[in-house]
Length: 506
Ligand code: UN1
Image (cartoon, rainbow, N blue to C red; front, side, top):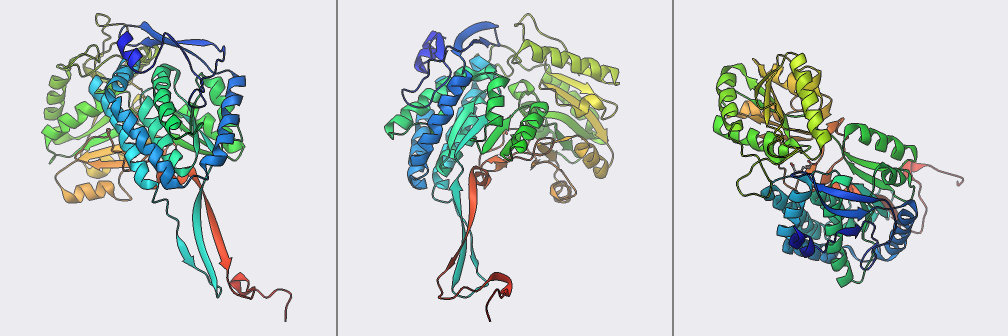
C-alpha cells in the first residue's frame, strides 16, 4: 500500500486544499482519516479545508480566471490533452487507489480512470468546436450571431463512487470552456482527489498556469459555502436526491445555475423474444458491478411473464457464483460496500421489501467472514412495485417484477420518481422503437440490448425527474459550462429598429 501511495505522491497525512502547482495550503483544518472499506483499516489522512482556506482558493481562482479566459480555447485544449496523457500514465496506480479507497474492483477502477482519459481526449477536440450559430438579421446590413464565453470559477461536488471520472467529466470540459474548477470530492474518496490534484498540478505547472483545477475537502459545511457563493456561477453536484434538492434550492435562491446528477432507479425490461444470454450478462454487470453503487446500477428487472421463471433461475445461479472479496484480487467481481452505514441501509431495505411481500431468492446476508462491509448480491422477487422498489438503495439489490403487455412494462418502468438510465432487451425492432419513443422510457439514457450502466463519455450523461435534469460529459453538455451571448452588428449608416418600429422620426 505504501508503494502505491508513494507512486501517487500521497503521504500519511496530506493537505486537502490546493490552488495549483506548489499551492497546497497548510490549513490546520480538521483531519479526516480515509479507511479501506475492504478491511476497515485506515489508509491515510487528509487535512480538510477551513472557511479561511476556502476563501483563499476561490480568490485565487478568480484572479487566475482573468488570464485563463483570454487564452484561446484550442490552447487550453493542449493542456487538457496533456492532462489526459498524465492520467493515462498513472492509470494503474490511480485505478488501484480508487479500488482501495472506495471498494470497486481493480478492472472497474482502471476503467474509471480510462473514462477520465477519454473525456480529456473529447475535450481536446471540443476546444476547436465551441460553436455558436449565426442568424440572418431582419434589418438590412446587420449581422447576428451568438458566441459562447467562459463562466468563471465553478464548483464541482462529486460522489464517492466515481471520484476521478466525474471530476474529469466536469473539469476537462470546463477547462477548455475557459472556466476554473473548484472541486469538493466526497469525504469517502478524498485521497483519490488529492492524487488527481497532484497530477493536475504537474500539468498546470508545465503550462505556467494555476487555479484552473483547485481542490477543497470537507463535509457539508464546505459544500454549503460553495452553494451559497455568488462567485461560483455554476455548481455541478453529483449525489443523493435529498442533498441535491438542497443544493438546487440554495443555488436557485441566488439565481445561480446548478447541474444535478442525482439518484437513479434504473430498470431493464426483458421481452419474451430477448436473447437471455445477453440479459444475464447485462444484469450481472449492471446490478452487481461496483457492488450496486453506481447511479446507473440496475435496480429493477421487469420481465415478461413467459420468460420470468427461466431468467430468474439463471440469474439466481450466476448470483450464487459471484466471487466476493478484496477488490484488488484478480478474479473478484464484487468488493465491499463503501461504509457500514451502507450495509445497514441495505439490510433495512431488505427488511422493508419482505414486509411489502417480497421474497429473497438469493443473497440477503452480510458476510462478516470477508470483512465488516461485505454483503451478498441479492435478488428479491416483489409482488408489486411497492415503496421500497421506488426508492434508490445504493447496494446490490435487484427487484424482480413481471408483466404481460409492453404497455404494462413501460408503465411500471416509468412509475418511479427517478429517471436516469433504462434498457430493454428485445429482438423486435418495433418493441425497441416503442421503448425509445416519446411514450416509452422517460429516462435521460435509454438502451437496447445493453444494460443500464457503463455509459460511454461521448453522450450527454444525466436524467430526468428526481435525477435532476442535468447533463454532463459528452455531446453538447459543454454548453452548461459557458454563457451564451447574442450579438447584433450594424454595418449600415442607418439605425432601423427591429419589428419595424418607427421611433421619434418622420
Ligand atoms: C455514476 O454512477 O455517478 O454510466 C456515474 C456509468 C458510468 C458513470 C456512472 N460511465 O455507469
